[in-house]
Image (cartoon, rainbow over all chains, first blue to last red; front, side, top):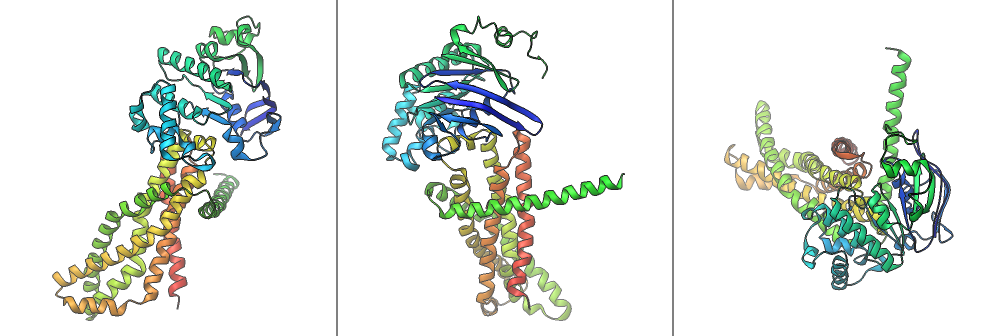
Length: 248
Length: 260
């Protein structure tokens, strides 16, 4: 279970999170939706400790996320970044098995390579991709490699930051299906941020609408269309009319 | 212009300079501490050795050989005014080893290595690769900064020493081929005149300039702003800061080694 309690974060005068509360039950897939610049990525990075909240508490399985063994804490997480964030200087297989090549989870290089190729297959990439460099791959392939890296160490919790941004609808569908399958198969807790409604319907067990620095509505994905919440309704319809200002 | 506003602007600029000095000092201490604390990343260290040391050799060598040659011509021309042309080997040797070898080598390495480190790390920052490192339980200071700092401290003195030798060789070629110096006498004068103290000062300067070039590249890369403009600004600032700090450190070290 991940719990955010009254989390605040500001950058100068820009108060991004203004008391965000959210519960993500263990083994479920939560998708946070909201417009650009509403703090979705900030919330996610606060959980990981990449950004320190100004105030509020974040708990993972009842323990304060800001204290304790940082390496052990991060070892429980996998993350797919918006632009994949692959390391340019390393071939694909070393990107995927990065964690297995160094640090406390270090394994022999041959074994790490096998794992990498296995995970690449899992995301629909052939083994010949393993020796290429990230710059030689298309955007969709980079996202898949990023996904393979996120699941390589079989984490309990996986974060997906805008997993389909910049991809065509077909590739978006492939990535969405992969995420859903992998999360279900691994029994992982997932937190995804997106403004792609097809991703929401494909990935989510639960949905949370973030606007104005707080969660405006949260509930099961099945109830999203009939939520009655004006923010959610406007977001789903993509209308310029409603409580969310079109010009921000 | 309102004088109070002007004073305020000057005050803010001074405070910014001091704040930056403080941040750079803390960053340097942190970077050095990570050199000695595990985990270590030998592969990254070897890559940094190659990039900073081996691949900088042509730039440093070419800079040194032309500088040594020009120095020989200048000393000969200047010395001729008071019949002191014979001091060319000694002054080329002392000039290259004590000053021009380390300083010009350091500046060339700042241009080549500091800019490259800053641009690479800044790009990693704006493309979230630094965040990715953290989520993969890898400390960016250990993985990115410590190997580069250690490699620079170890390789730049070697580069400077090689540059010193090449610079002296440049002076030797010009003196013996164009200025009529005897080859054996030139070499004998060079060897006899140089002292161990001169060589040590050159190596210490090299190590210090190596530290400066790597730290400045890493610091500005890690603290880069967003987007292409952020990367460009980080790269430019890193080279400016490294060059100024190399010249300032050279002045201080020259005072320490050679103050009468």
